[in-house]
Structure formats: structure tokens, C-alpha cells
Picture 1 (cartoon, helix red, strand yellow):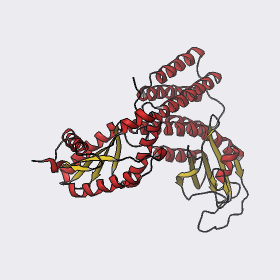
Picture 2 (cartoon, one colour):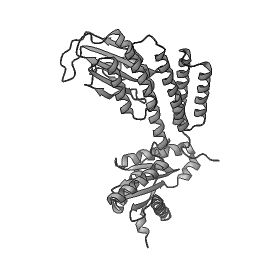
Picture 3 (cartoon, one colour):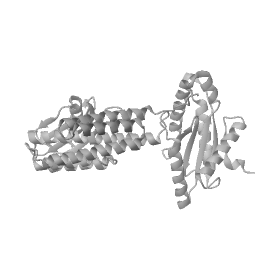
Picture 4 (spheres, one colour):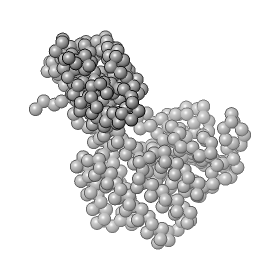
Amino acid sequence: MRRRNGIGSQQLQDVTEKFRRGEQKLLRILEEEGLLTEKERTGLAERVDRSVAQKRSSEVLSTAHNIHNRLIRALQADKDAGERRQPVELDVLSELSRLIQAPADRERVLAQILDLIAQGIPYENGTLFVANRATGQLTPSVVRGGHVDLIGAVHFDHGFGFSSWVAKQKKPILLTDLHASRRDGRPDIGSFLSVPMVVQGELIGVLNLSHTANGAFTEDHLRLLTLIAAQAAAILQRVLMYEELARLAITDELTGLYNRRHFQERLADEIRRAQRYGLVFSLLYLDLDHFKAVNDTYGHALGDRILADLARVLRKWGRSSDLIARHGGEEFAVLLPMTDAAAAVLAAERLRTMVADHSFPRRKRLTVSLGIASFPADGQTPEDLLKRADAALYTAKKLGRNRTVASESLAV
């Protein structure tokens, strides 16, 4: 059986494998700390392996919740056993562990982390930076008080500022005797704390805290923030994993465009919105002409490169409000909100010309055929609109390819 272009999800496999390694390490640490028995650790480890082997994101997330609930119970039991820590520290760490249960909303979770830190460390300004997993660059994601960093104009590997230096060194910094002077409207800083957030050697982010007074932070505060940063890094890693799983669920791996399922869900939403407010929109359906011959002659590797290149052309052509998806094989679909049939034809013709003028990999010159259906004239359901757009595309192919046909032009 011949492989179809872009089938498979290596990205999803990579994400779930990273999840598996992280959970296995967490379970080993819990066993070493006496928070799990060997039997409990083995049972949970086997469940992790099974969930990953099933390749179902719902099972992976269910397993994560089970392990994290077990972690919360273990921490609570440890707290009740009277471990020698200050009550405030235990409360903060216990509350942090609860955030692992539902880390779906990144901004909400990160804001809660900064709020919990304030219960144990008297800071005035706090910034939580998140590292971009592709570039490693730090971005301030949540701020309490004013955005705080030092030497902001200095660039290191992970971006500008002292936080980037801490990220590179992966070591915490405590400064307690700074000269607190007003700097371009930014907060005065007498004391400064910066701690990297790291999981399994991977930089996740950086926590910066400041206070106007000298000596506001102590070594105990540094120790507590280091403990918090370790838990916060695990929480944030799971937030990022959830986001990645959610993105992969609606994204075509090869092209980076939306996939068929997501497009059809959004099409149904757009119909409901248009019906409610009396709006029009158009659906554009297209595919590459003679693409099968490219696959048969040059192989699927070149075919994949061409499809990915066409996706880049589509993104360059489309408006920010347009929804562009790979609908299957060499077929693509575009939702054009607030666009009637006449405007859709103009947009389609502009796209057709862009593709014809584009030099694809191996300097291939290719064309596309396009079919258009418009709401409400051509249908009131997703099925009807897709059927009419597909019929218009078929007509464009019959008429010689490299052309645009609107469904209403088919009407007798």
C-alpha cells in the first residue's frame, strides 16, 4: 500500500515520550523519598507505559492526573507527619502541587504561582518568564507589581536581561544590597531574587522577584523559591505539554495548517454565527493539478515538500481572519468570513496566480484548481456547502484545470 503524503505524527510521539520520561523520573523520586512504595511505583510506571503505548492523548492526560493526585496525597501525608519545615512553606508547596491537577489555562496557572509565592516571600514585584521551546528565548508571561529584571539592555543566549544570564547558568541568584534608584520609570530594586525553572536539564522558565528595601530577601527565601521553582517548572512543563497535545489535535503535521476535523468544526460554528447575525461567508476548495504524477514520478518525499511549500503560499495569501486547512491529500479548504461569492472569486484568482507564479522545490511549476461555495446561497449545512464547493472544483478540473469556478455559476 502506498503511503499518503504527511501521514503519521512524529511530533505527538515526541511529546508523549517526553511525558513518559518525566513521569517515570517523578515516580522514582517519590519512591526514593519514601512517598511511594516499590509496588505503588511499579504499578503507576506500568500505567504510564500503557497510556503512551495506546497513543491516545486522553489516556495520557488521565494517567497524568492520577499520578498527580497521588503526589498531592503523598505531600499532604508528609505534611501531617510533621516534616521539619515552616508551616507557610508546607502550605505553599502543597497548594502548588494542586495546580498540577488542571493546568489547562497557562495564564491562570502562572498567575496563581506568583500569588502563592507571595504567601512565603514578601516581594513587591515579580515576573515569571517562560522559555520558547523552539528558540530558547525568554518571554515575560505573568507580572505582579512591575516587570522586574536587571541589566535589561544586555543580551545573553536566552534573550535580554539578568534573567537570561540566570537561564544560561541554571543557578539561582540572591542580591540583597542593590542601589535602589529610579530607572526610566521601572521599579526601584534594593533586593533581587532570580531562580531558573528546570526539569530534567531542560530550561522551562525563570522566576524574578524584587523589593525596594535592602535585605528584604534571605537565604531561607532563596531556598524556598528554589523549591517552588522546581515544582513550578514541573507544572509549567505539563501546561506546555497539554498545549502541544491540543495543538497537535487540530493541526496537520506536514503543513502546519489546521486539519480536516478542526476545519469542519469551525465551519459549523461559522454557519451558526452567520445565521444568528445575518452574515455571508464563502468556502474555497482547491487542490494541486496533476499532483499524482508528481508523486508517481519523483516520490512522496518531494510531494511532501511541495505540499508544505503550498501551505506557506496559502499563509502568505490569506487574511488573519481566514481559516486555512489541509482537507486531505493534496486538497485544501479555506473559510473566508464576511466574504460573498464575488469577493471570493477575486481572492481565489489572486491565489491561483500566486501559485502559478511560484517556484516549488526542484523548480517545479504547478497550478491549482479552485471551487467556491457561498453561504447562504449554496447551502445551509456544512455538508451542503462542502458538496457544492467540491462540485465546483470538479467542474474546474473538467474545464481544463488552473481555473476558478463558483458554485452559483453552476446553477441552471
